[in-house]
Length: 347
Length: 174
Image 1 (spheres, rainbow over the protein chains, first blue to last red):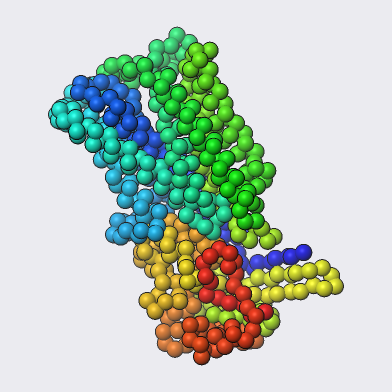
Image 2 (cartoon, helix red, strand yellow; image 1 turned 45 degrees about the horizontal axis):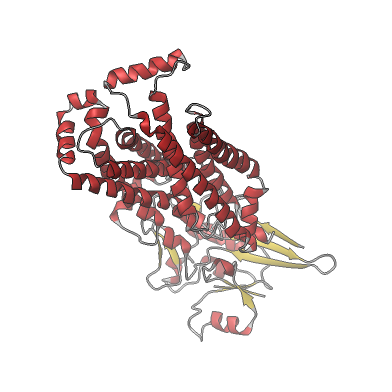
């Protein structure tokens, strides 16, 4: 038997490590969501190669939402910093071994890429805004007159989106001191989780924009107000089944990656095995199995499968479940990761 | 640094000396005492250790720092933090397997510096200089003629969590 006593009592470290609170999971979730929106927008823009403006949820609403979501995520990250006055120091150096340094520079590239994607079809999606700012129409015309430029914007969104999505996972995955995080699988896991939440968000927006007799009058009133203000034309809802299908593919890959993460840990050192058990049957198991696996992945998979088979109509329920599941996944992994430790196996 | 666990009595003089020398804020500590009890009665073994930042040769806290605030001293062997560069992202706290860092009330990451300001003047770190049992030894482990090298060559020793791959610079004699 071994009994260990530590007389240290540093706040945030003792008796249990808790250096990151709600801000980091929220930032990782929003970062992944924006990465997914960028990739979907880029792919859609490239596949279509449009020469005429269209009201596209993937290429206009998605990137515009992405700009707002990324700003919210960066605000959460900023709130987490304890020495906020020095934040500008991030942009005085590039540290190649630090994922956070990579991320801070990647985030700078995200804004122009998202903006270019959004502006391509903005005049059609939000005519009211285009009327007030004629420059938006000129920019859109300029981009659409150059097919190679359109492809370039699409490629840039895909490349930066992949980098952003993987970075949010590697931010944790490179911290070897916390066995639960110490896996390269976290990079693709957060990327595909981001893709699934992005597809779910866009699918949810399409469902909400579709006329529905059973929707509460108040919700209809809010939507009609928004549509009237923006003078927006109806979004092309033909892509809704494609988004649901894509979401199911992303959720399936995400499930497989979670499985690989756990298999990797369970076949590794005692510390990694103890870390995996935090999720499998430890203090975080209930939240992990119910909210991440059950309600966050399996339930929306099932509902969207029924939607695609035309057994039930498209609703926002799967979208909300996927979005909540993605957020809880980050919360669980950040919390459980801080609870995992090399010495855990010794105690 | 080499610490003789057979001499350490856990008096915490090193903790008090560090707090005094480095003006460590109330409620925080840069070094601390741990006790590990092995075995079952009547064959019980107690080991007392004075612990601190291990000033690793492969420091993950330096690798993950996005601003270069965490760095290795120009002459090597000592891991330091420049408060003016630190943004308080806490990545280094999460990256340290020894949980040796903390966030100073002024917002920056703080930790043991091996009292580099004293060492540069030819003095010993405060914790080493006050130890009443002389269980702590400080020097260059790369110099085969130094006290620490001779102790490491003559006595069984270990480092904390070698499996973490950080190559700690603090050794414990058994």
